[in-house]
Image (cartoon, rainbow, N blue to C red; front, side, top):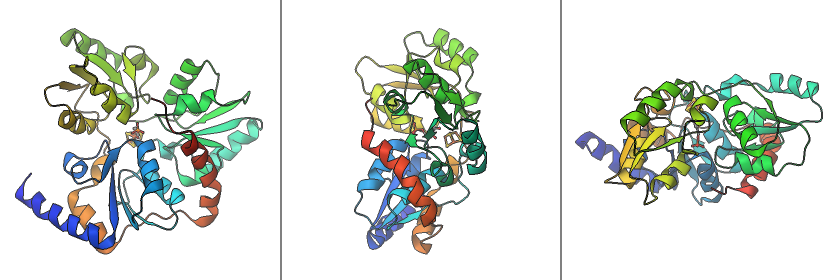
Length: 307
Ligand code: 13P
Ligand code: SF4
């Protein structure tokens, strides 16, 4: 750790105690931000942690929809997002108005909403899911018609795994579509012993070449297995920090150092300190939206995840 960081970390830690705050950090965050976390995890684990924390303040080091989900679950807590511009480009690919119009075309459809969406979109949905539990959630539905929003590739993967046909919203993650099948084939040649693991936001062509498909924390669990010595990692670069830290002696090969989510990188130690000092920027979902969005989120949390 650099001296500058050591000073910041000390100040954050003191202020965190004073505010009775908890720091929740997504697996894609900068290494130095992951290192100050009370908990590092995937979207599902972070919402589960928000639900059970006794803290008064949640400092959410991730993107806007994650902080909103914490606000939906914990209306009495202050949820801080150290950079308010940290959005999710996929979440912006759907709006409540466009979703309402689609629902009118399919009045019988159950709407399964990937957690990477705004609170207002969740409020128009029937049940949420994350990459860790999407298969179980869809498998558990009796509906004849399912509208899956907003990630077409996660939807495609879930449909293939469950055998259920779904109407797919045409959204996607601009970071994960940078992962190309040709690159996976090259890496297989270069590292013939390595296991290839990819995130379900990747395209079907990439998923077809993988040994395993998992959420970000699912990848961390997979990496701990004894038989995994080398792993090609098909997701955002930030996770490499955690994988290497938890598994010294194993080799982790990112598919490309260009696979970066710029919004995830907006959170820095300086901004975490500043947000705790100022108690800002706060993410607070308006109560009329929260009251509608809580039902689909709660349904998902009750189901949890089987990995
Ligand atoms: P996870 O829930 O797997 O961490 O994924 C979140 C995300 O935004 C992936 O791009
Ligand atoms: Fe959204 Fe993609 Fe960034 Fe995940 S990696 S937060 S889906 S833009």
